[in-house]
Length: 83
Image (tube, rainbow, N blue to C red; front, side, top):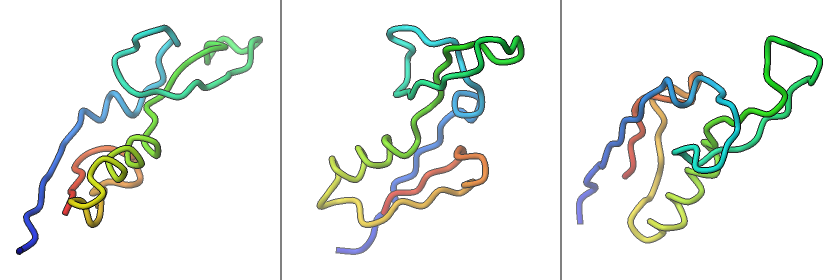
């Protein structure tokens, strides 16, 4: 069976910015603890959990996904190709 690539693109603005932490944030997140005295970063924010998302993709597609390629690793966003 020949390799059939499957691509997925996500909105980089979700990955790039931290958001105030709350329940049901709308994406798989990880808490980021900031400085409570700093006004530039809220004390409790959440960011997109890229490593665990790739881990779940790998686990669920164990027999189908042979490799995962991130087109823009410096941004942790953009085009992701599964083969």
